[in-house]
Length: 43
Image (cartoon, rainbow, N blue to C red):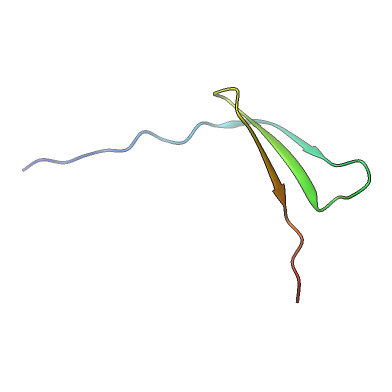
């Protein structure tokens, strides 16, 4: 039996909100990458 395990994703180390639009966030990751998200939900 062969089992493959995936490495865990890098941990986030920083979170910042856009100063004029709180729907945009930047997340700094442990591996030095930055992810930018627009978290606005349109209903």
